[in-house]
Image 1: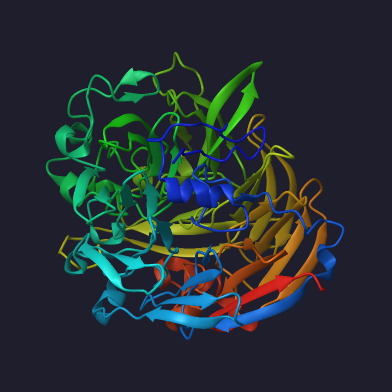
Image 2 (image 1 turned 30 degrees about the vertical axis):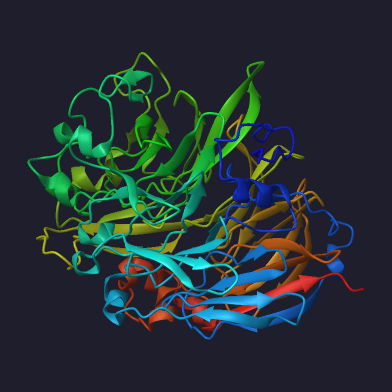
Length: 601
């Protein structure tokens, strides 16, 4: 079969034809815009749909078409898949899967209820979420909380194979969605707050055997890097680049976990993903740059070998996890078309890079409240080129252990957490759900013990002072100019994944539970509906018969909603989030529901 990556429009990856470039079943599914075969809608991660029956002129007429209760009361991230006339719905722990017949009132065709040890809940740092299923070669792939990667027959739910990717006894868990590329299933690992050493692993689709594993820290061979050919900002990383940036053998418990999103360029045959925070949160205990935590990694999908790295926050002092999605677009810069990667990092900076070479092109704050650094040094002749210029007042390392550094913006949950942004080739803009939250941060000395929290900091969070009036914004971003085009304030952080469509509508959800639709050009609100619980899932759209539908999983939770999800009340619990979001309980309650909308007949 001739594999093609859907060329959505100018600004997206162009159409290519090469049998070995991508998994045929996935690329065929991506080409059919009425289906959903991957969480980010396509390999480029744009979360843009060509479906356009629902437009900015008629979206105000949306009505609830049908609903489905998941039966689980924790944070619902990700979105269902739609293959043919079947919708596949996942839940948080215990990670149940339902296959629903879209032609027969959502009849349950099969269900998968995994048997997992509930002890894993105790080592999941920020709720028992799961970011969704993946599809390929007639199988539905699920990465369970206990790190078991399962391949289910799409027709029957039968387990075709399963493999264990980690050890919960060491604090290793899984919350990420797999990515299916060619003959491989790619999956990361969670557990940075337990001293887990991060890795990305590729398993063979056919039988689940490991094809390669690339660690985030440690010896070159285990990281799958070539000291002379793996580049950072145009230069070879050099021998033992990671080992030389840690004290002793701290890299073995160094974090850099890989629980975010992965994207793929079939022309370059490269995958892109981010690594998380170093362990512990006390920077005084781990001198050095702590490479390669907090890093965008570009790797050959066949071998896992690294092409280039870029560390966004060296020697992280604030838990600015670097795992957010890397969106791949082609755009003109200085009169030349460039293959770009755009990343909205937790640290409050939005990065535009050349995804082939790793050249840094733009690095600007996408929230004006960000204060921990003045800027990213863009002078290629400078010794600090590519590094953020840290403000001493907000440096938890410079202030030292047992000192409460106050008023740091953003908070540890970042200007944007895992909730994925969207990109519209029609407007050329990125649509970004953001947090407008600051924190006080007091590091303290902590000892490592396998399976025990390895945090070493006490946090409290609060709305940014003198803010626009809330804890969140939904913004439109120009990645070439590095500036906000428009910004919509929200009372709470916007924790849902955005969706852009060819109907000139952008959708997002709020922590109070509203599904909202806005004009992609102006940001004008066109529609809203309050679902039964707060939304931290990703808005999705599909076609069944000749009708377009829009849907979302609601079920408050995640880091922002951990107080509600886990019944926590102490302000510093939930790694500091409980106090910051205490008012959320006045607006929503626990739930687990899929709500699907359509235009009236």
